[in-house]
Length: 364
View 1 (cartoon, rainbow, N blue to C red):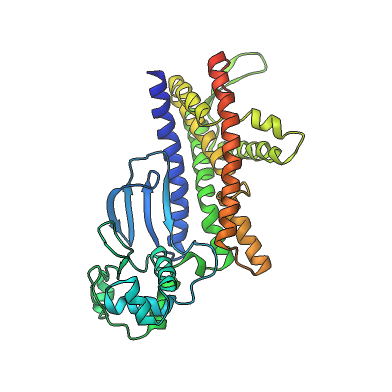
View 2: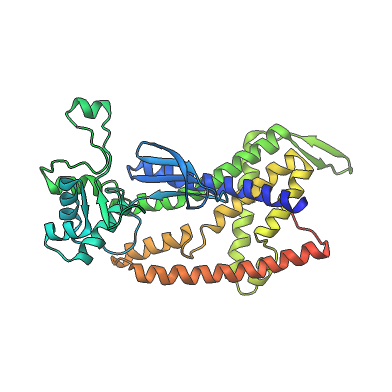
């Protein structure tokens, strides 16, 4: 029963913290006018939900986390055929890849590449499992009252529509993509998830130290229960964040890297600690969730793809070199990052299992 509770508590805590992390990316993207086609509680998979403001909000069966599908984040150069392909599909409403290739005078492979990219943009709807061929459709258009008053018509999924200016259509879609933004806005979107984790942790520290209060030992050895003012609680929160930053920075120092890894826990250790925290009461739960939120945020800043920090380093490289990192190169970097994380996980998981078996326990 204890193992089941450990899994449940860890899933709820980690799932919620990853979900609000992705919420930071979602809010930042929408603030800059970038399309986000999905915002889900849970890892990618079958989902149920509703669509609002062009985003499908919902839940998947795999509740350990969440994701926001920000459009236009695909690496590499854009297909040179996006504009004519987009216009051709809108004029047809529904078309196979071969139809679009014939309309635009390009090869099937070029048409497929452009259609796939436009699907990632959320500009068109890609093939479904029921389609026998590579069939693409123009999206649903539901104009707002203001747009309807201006003469914009509603269109059903796959409905043909007139295209009076192909370039204007393409530009309107391009402006809703992550890749269309300047460097600083892209950077804000990338670090927004980390910012939300850290701000949420600071809020929890305020609740813990100001509203609930903490027990401290006086010089005389007595135990007193005190409540800090909100400013002091915020300072305590940022002090803790600084300690975590300093700890993780030790990974890049050969003399301290081993010690840092040994003091770190995998998801197995987090599961064990989550049950300990729940058993100890509300104050312990708040403290634990705050610490995990900080760790999750700071770890995401590591300059290793596919983490946010890794993507930020790629953005900086592209800004300085004025060259786009290719999809092939990004895949290699991401694969190397995943191998590195797998090695860390196996090492830390072994540590956690040994601690559980030996009854040593985990630090706070």
